[in-house]
Length: 294
Image (tube, rainbow, N blue to C red; front, side, top):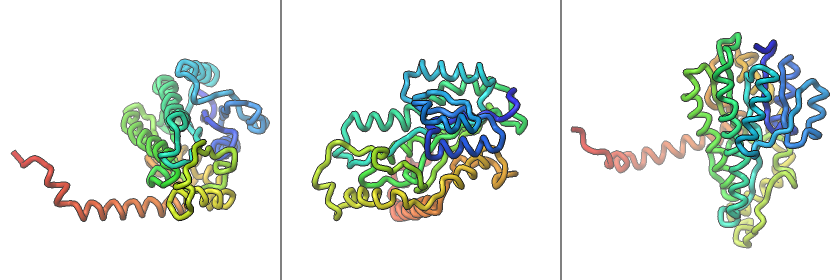
């Protein structure tokens, strides 16, 4: 068994991946930080991380080979963090099949392929001192709860990541492996920066109009960039606490959703209210479709 908890973090070159890696390192944990190009994570190597070139969109056989290498070198992975992802901005009519596939390939398929490759090894590793065999975390967002004009494909991928974590939480419980989804609101990272935010190649004038929801969204993303409410370093500290059951999470069970930011809280509460109104308004109709009791 490793002397310290071992973290495997995808997309550690920036944003939450980077902040989580640094937080875990400050706690004396072992961190395997990955990026497509290791030149982008040399600062993490200087801070004590093991660095590894890793692309979540690689063929499954390549990802499986990386998993075998990691377990051969480190013996275990206590925390498997899937932080890779990007936002595709474009209306549903504008985005091409290739752009939709690329978004799902990174945000969803890459996540599930990485988890599938690591799970056989995680199920076989001994329990840690806290009685947990390991933790698997995906990244959702407030977009996991709210579809939005102009970023519909991104919302679709984030709903998938949250559903994946909820399903994994049940599947992995018998093996003392926990699963959760991290759902941040808007945090001040490079996520929305020009060149990082992916924009559909096709642009339709009808959706550019600032009077329609899609036009409002694309203008708002530019305004929000650099002015997000969330502090990524504070968020990362909370995530590490919650995944490891320390600090603010001492004595508490790991929830299936780690919600971060008051803006995410507001979106989720609004979703509850709107959904409850639908159920209340249509309760007689929705119940009318049941077969009569035998």
